[in-house]
Image (cartoon, rainbow, N blue to C red; front, side, top):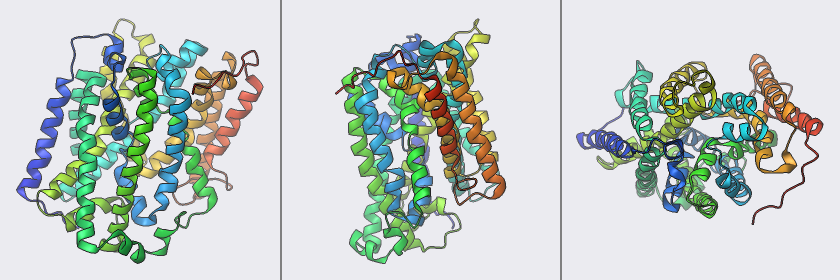
Length: 471
């Protein structure tokens, strides 16, 4: 499908990148302390907290479009409900504890609790989790659509990602938050415009509901329970997500962290409604035979939006992706440089190592894209293999019920991750099942979690007592 852009559309995109760079660079500070650079001096206000968390947690917008175009409202059950639930639990029981903890990152929190070797070891799976490969891949898809071909698209996308790296390296979390405030408004504005013109072009949501295929009205999307259930387990990612931990640690107060996540859940619910409806309108307006379902939103916008509004919508797509890309670049650089490499480069400051490692993280993400050129596959693979190794140790930092004796932590992390990777590999060899790579009917994440649970049962620190939960 050919893209038809007017001059005003191109100008809006160019202005977006220029404004993003200016805002990001203005986020620089003369205060070179780690707490200021990495956590904004722990003074993140409630509105800024909500803006940055809402935008950075929704970067996989093309993957969401791919799914909602194909399966309709079951998107809410797979990619909405479990994340609302876990985010609520995170806000209620974890956010205040993280804010009160002196650590500046997940590996540092683990190091303070279990020892320096554990923190450095944990930096590896944390780095994998925050690698921006899925978002760089989506950016390359959009760039290919803009230029009308696939040649060199990854190179163009990398150039755009380098723009983000410039202001991230310069301004740290302050730059990320400042750009997120702009981008969250663009996210909602762009999809509101798309829905307005979709309704005007096709009809009301009631009409849409009658006309979409039956599978789009099915709460499970026609998937079996085991497939649905695995995504609920992958949503456990929320508890160990470095972005969640970073925002909670950066909040002005424990109450700000808790309330900010509650408000973010409400915002995600609204945005999910917008994206689900947009995917279903794509189905009825474009038809069910798209060769690239991942491009459902761009194709719909190209067909129904007038000049100017079309540019605004593509800016909203770019903003949704860029808000997560720059955040993950920053977190990946911090994890690789500050939390992992600093032991061997003590002559360099941790901030300098973070800045250098931002570029290294970008190079690693390019390699991952060549290995797994699919958004949903990247989410599935990273979540299935890394969550089992981190979940219990991270929860053990904040809750004594999950605490494990120090000597068991590294074996738990390494064995559970390797078990998941091995099972995933066997699933890939034998063909897998759709988006998943289960082997013998067992998902990799289940095996990894069982191994992790076994280590916890054997190595649990029974001297600790269960803490009272914060209200």
